[in-house]
Length: 461
Ligand SMILES: [Zn+2]
Image (cartoon, rainbow, N blue to C red):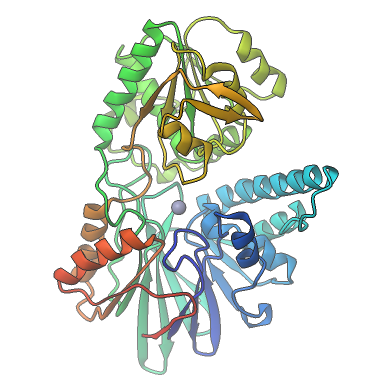
């Protein structure tokens, strides 16, 4: 088996690894590169390998940095299978459709304003085609990927449906195995089960390293922090504005707000989910309750995790606009997660200068995003072309991260090693340089042979 690294190498986006075995060629993920527009665009428009070579795609989870170039493959004629868990297939469909829609709108807007721009990477039709190519699988069951190659998913505990993958190639009597971690989640998150490290012995592990240099706040303290922010802001008569990722973060917040409300830890404040994508994602959650983590007592007691008397979901733009006129305390959860687009911008334009309000940041904010400028508490921010004084208070909760921290990453790998005595090499991917070098040093000290491959590096296993 040979691996070629074709994305998320010494960076956090564009996840793609090419596995060649038995004359077959398999892609592990085919994600979007994100970041500086022109750089990312050039990478996104080049294929990882000739389309005719690809026999199958094995997808780890729905996030666009793992799935976002699949419609581009379809657009270039790829018609083979795309393997995924059921929840990943469901979530990927709505995320790819949303991504195609945004690209088509941006293209239309920029060309109308006389800007020379490349056409969208793919269309809504290409995104729908990906849905037709999906083959759905359960966790912990082998499935055939290509001739002489099979795979098995285990729960990665990162977002709904997320998986780590074991790839097994058999040639004659020789069997070789590779483990790809996908993105690894945290232990103790609500709704999502804890990561289940694969137990099939492998000689090579490809592992993510996003937070290889950081430990997170605990999930329990994140929930207490959330309660305090809602109580304090409501006492001032203000609004809590939460920019949140539509998949995972929003559902976890709604679930925690419902629990806090039942425990009377927060006052009965109306909570509005103002994001069509989050509403669609919540429906996918409701269709995949069989893979929820039911270990928390509250999960047994609550009939409906995401719907209760104080919560509502907007559907039309008019309903969203009408929120501006509401008086009294309110919690608004809206996209986008890094405040780069979506309805949260309108709520910030209306509310960021009011010192009674709170902007609550619950996710990673990359450089050069409006979210990062809010985290830095810049005195004036630019929202939808307007200068707005940032006088609302800003609170940051790190405990809602969907990624394992450095302690959890090491624990996941230690569990894999217990059942993989022949483990030779650990390849770190999906991490920036500082995170990778810190994790590489701590794993090397524990006796692992670690590599941080560059793009197009190859490795035989
Ligand atoms: Zn992810």
